[in-house]
Image 1: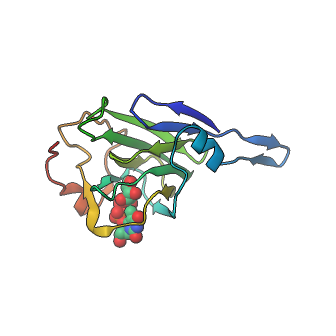
Image 2: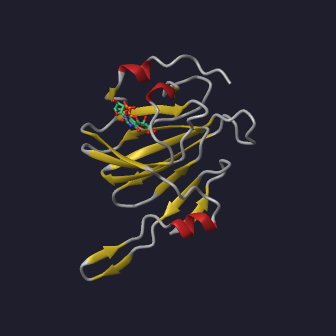
Length: 176
Ligand SMILES: Cc1cn([C@H]2C[C@H](O)[C@@H](COP(=O)(O)OP(=O)(O)O[C@H]3O[C@H](C)C(=O)[C@H](O)[C@H]3O)O2)c(=O)[nH]c1=O
């Protein structure tokens, strides 16, 4: 794996290093030693997958309220997403800054998202599945969010939104 700092404090893009042969490829997607060498979280007690049928679906922006913040390692298993993170840590040098990346089954890129970031994505293909490795056990009551079109941030989405949960349209205005 190759680790690329992406300019938002503590967030990384993890590039796959595929071992190709005539059958296809083999790729390591996680390693405690390699993550520890980069000072990254190595404990992910819960792994989850979301599946979205329709291109243009938006999930997010989500985060867990303190003290239940989560580190997430996100990758796209099939299809493709525009994956967006927003630094919502008031003390961070990159507070309020956001970045977006195309993650796909094809490119195998992973996004390492520290605690204190809001995360969301829009699917770029039908039948897109996204894998999460999560550093904390899920606490439903700590779930919080930001509207995908919150005026406090300059997040650009590639497609018209085709599906979005009612709760994701109803998050309150962002207050630092
Ligand atoms: C996140 C999560 C959810 N759930 C349950 C709660 C709901 O009954 C159901 C769907 O949850 P939710 O509507 O939050 O799923 P998404 O809209 O895909 O949200 C996720 O996608 C955005 C982009 C994220 O970054 C978060 O990881 C996560 O919030 O799964 C669990 O049981 N465990 C979990 O860790």
